[in-house]
Length: 279
Image (cartoon, rainbow, N blue to C red; front, side, top):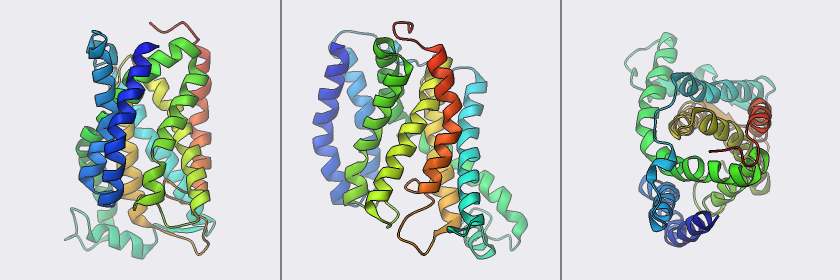
């Protein structure tokens, strides 16, 4: 575990610089890229510090089916959560006005037709995932490439994935509290919902990493989630009248749906990846 301890020492040191930069910049694109890469840099430096191969991070691409799962899951839980919240009147989602606003800001804004909605979503999602890969990879080198197999080897899937998920979530808290990375609702509920959502997502992401033997499906998942939730669904939704956020990454409904969709991956991971069984 000495490599893991060195990873966390480097990670904390880098974040003593990165976190204030995020807060000072108001969660700018540059500061987000920097802080996301502190995780990957910590993993790479920790491995080289002990003279270990960077190949341990899982650089092979992995079977295509894992990437399809990674691309599809955010579409499933995102559509279910936002659709449910909209149907129940807890938020506005995909109303004609919101669809029109999304189309106007998209690549087919010259199409004055509702038929442009689906092509716009597809283009925004596909291009966005490619663009988001560089930042998502920075995190996934560390969380899933480095940390997941080591902690699973030591503790088994359930505890390793839970600990990784909680650390991953709490790491975001300064940004939620002191920058623009929030939805403007009740802060306690947003923190709790975000904690539950991110910890739950740690399950399918760890399963993808361990099942495929590659960090890339987790990076695909991370990029797909960020784009589909933040760039597509958030742009076609508005929060409800109450001060408790229901949708977005900080929403109660979103967190609960993510837990339900993630549960089978937790079960599969617990059954498949026991303590001491990861090579």
